[in-house]
Image (cartoon, rainbow, N blue to C red; front, side, top):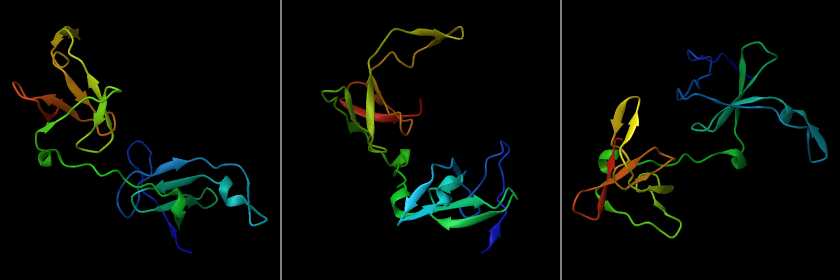
Length: 156
């Protein structure tokens, strides 16, 4: 058993020593019975790295952590997000629910209808004056290319 001391970010979050991603904290759950035996490990909190497929558990509040492989049923597949430069102009059509698939991440995008110019912090905001699609998952915005049926990724 090898113990690891994990580094922290400026806002006190732990970082994975392998990939450098911020670890996701999961509270301990209730006591679980597995194969007729009480499993007390389920009650302990864990720090999970979804990218590496491992989790870390602190040893008696010492600041040192044990590394364990994440069970297959708990692994999350990271969504594949296409780079913005690789997305060609695309024809996007609203479906019955007012949404369509995002060309960048594949999740469902919301359609935002055009509205009047709004005043935000004393300045005019023209961002919602034309119809566009907004993806809440990858934070992408696709705006219509003027005079065509094509939509293109926009930085805002």
